[in-house]
Length: 348
Image 1 (cartoon, rainbow, N blue to C red):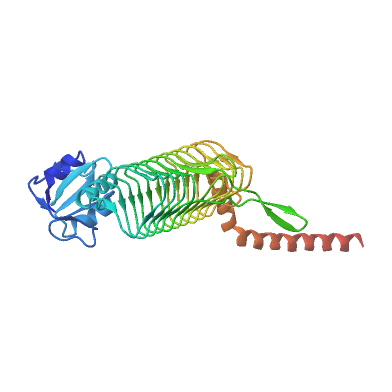
Image 2: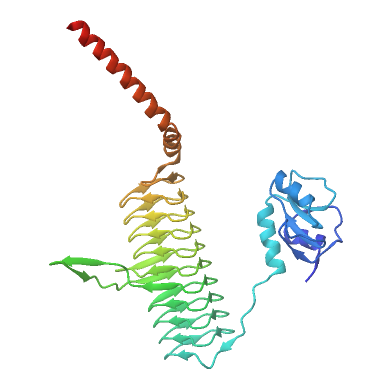
């Protein structure tokens, strides 16, 4: 597959500086570039590396207007590069049809151009929308809904009454709708609280590999439109994740917590139960948010327990001075001791 620089520029709304007719055979990293490749550079340092590579064309920021190579100048080079990757590597369309090894329950409704892979088990009264694809060895419980153009990769499990919106991608090994973790102690034993709610995943969500989303005790666990979830994330019962939020790998969110729109949680973040994060809250890696805490909109927090980033930075700066401060305290204690001894000797 090959496109001219001009065709690529029109696709990403960029401006060409150089030869529009130049043929680009592939996109590449700067390190692996060769003649006929396209690379991108976000800043001056990477632009210098890109110019020194064998690449034929560079997607560059607006500050770069001259080069010995052909440029496509854009406002956001990384975003433009992602769009070019889609151009050269469009999603592979699954083959429509139901594999003969799969088992479908009663009153299953399949839309047009649906793909059901081998060894899939689908329960009763399931609805699968137009263009949806169910990968090998998936299990879909009773009364589930999978929306138009959604993709379930291999070994995805949807428990009963899970609703998946349109254009949702769920990667291999994810489990959606497993029981929420709820128990009540009775005479030294743990009595299970029945988990009778459901899970709703809205449109344009991506769920990473081996993610677990628990069903609600009552009501719904809700993953709202446009949320992106990395691999190995745990979302507990009755959690609500706001639109366009991002959860990075190994994050765990405890029951009945609520995230607003556009929140970003770094890797290994732990969120206690009944926590409220308002819109656009950013939580740094390995932070811990205590149960019941509320964080206001547009705050960035770090640490465990999580605190505003300005305070944490001051504390970290102070910690770097601890050895010096310990030595100073020891010196002062020695001086004070000498003064006390002198005073006692004078009094005697």
